[in-house]
Amino acid sequence: MDELGAIKLLSRKLDIGDDCAVLGVGKRKVLVTTDMLHEKTDFPKWLTPEMIGWRSALVNLSDIAAMGGKPIALVIALGMKKFDRKFLSGFSRGVAKCCSLYKCKYAGGDLDKHDELTVVGTAIGVAELPISRAGARVGDAVCVTGTLGKACYYFKKRKWLRQKPRINEGMKIARRASAMMDISDGLARSLHQMGKRSRAGFKITFEKIPLFGSEDGLFFGDDYELLFTVPKSKLRKIKGVKFSVIGEVVKSGVWIEKNGYLRKLENRGWTH
Amino acid sequence: MDELGAIKLLSRKLDIGDDCAVLGVGKRKVLVTTDMLHEKTDFPKWLTPEMIGWRSALVNLSDIAAMGGKPIALVIALGMKKFDRKFLSGFSRGVAKCCSLYKCKYAGGDLDKHDELTVVGTAIGVAELPISRAGARVGDAVCVTGTLGKACYYFKKRKWLRQKPRINEGMKIARRASAMMDISDGLARSLHQMGKRSRAGFKITFEKIPLFGSEDGLFFGDDYELLFTVPKSKLRKIKGVKFSVIGEVVKSGVWIEKNGYLRKLENRGWTH
Image (tube, rainbow over the protein chains, first blue to last red):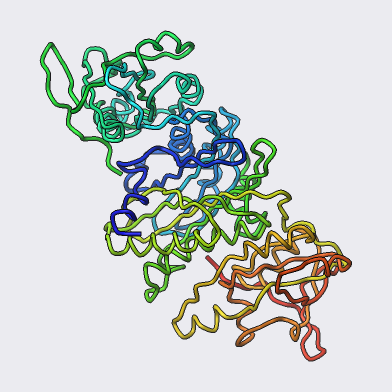
């Protein structure tokens, strides 16, 4: 394996590739995703142990949702300085609560001494037809679920929302979508990532984005909504999901129109 | 979830429980295991990046072997201070080489900045009939594959062996065994762990242990051989595996006989 191959493989979750690896087990497609979180980057001091647990489950289940999958199990490796019973109790409760919403089994993991609080979750899911980031076609509608920017707005007030992974939405959208991913790193970065993988571009309209709070929300991430593209003829077939059409797939570049003016949308967002 | 439940759940790999979580996917049994390794405890300075990669794959595949499974995929979350291309290249080569011996797919993972080199691997496997640590019955034969103590012997000389997970052996043994686990923490600790889970004890004979080097090897671990129990009537049915019968399952306690003298075998081994 050469150097570039090594980095590509290891960084599959950074900028290249999809949210999950897809495996065949018998006739089933099994999805696997892993995420490393740690104190410095991911857990502000004011987060409670239960919130840390919830967040650790959320990021992984959201990656399963991103491909239209149904989570079946989550394992967690936890490294910490001292095994604090109160922390472990709150942490596990947070993980278990998030998992139980989706009947996902919290199946144990590994405990290890580590100077910095470090959490690595790995989720396993199943999908009939996993949707990758690579299928966006020129002319498709660009859509997002729910509302963006809430996490950014509340983070500034030192609040962290107990957001939900869009599992049910993802499964419904997957039947019609040409490409999908979660918006964990912010809409701007997500559009760039999907564009790169699909070899396409996007033109979105600011006024159509279901944005809560300031424009910063486009670059902040932590929203865990889904970004997806879908042939316009299939838009009406997506039922039971709250989503907004914010633009369309174009040949190249990521463009945003605001007050009738068009500009490039920077590739900037949450950096882990 | 109460505190004790939380700790039990999180520490499933420490002292309680099995090497893998077992899930049903359709008609298949899917095994999942995760292991956190980091520089201070697991990677002595003289280990090359390729060895670090190999070891990271090995510990996880060995947990699949421990339950009689066949590995299908491995994902790795890697945290390091600076993304060093040379390290990443060697590391990935090590992971890929170990996986390829067993046709296990190295399916990517996550890259993250972290002060201490931290590797969390998660392996997925399948098994027709996963063997747990809990089935040892009084009168069963106690057996180990291969030779123990090599890792200890060479570690003292600052050498690390490229050991292999006992995948093929585990699959063959699983058809007959009553309980099984890998010996990653040393024979002494493994016997105590299996005894606790099976609510049984062991009496082994020092002279029957296929030991390389000194008695320290019983307490060192890092050997990745398999410890298993099997009804004596089925011993002959295990074919194509090199193993030794070292004792038998008794009601309680972990006992070792040497030169005709019996003593208790301490619960001491590799601590992560």
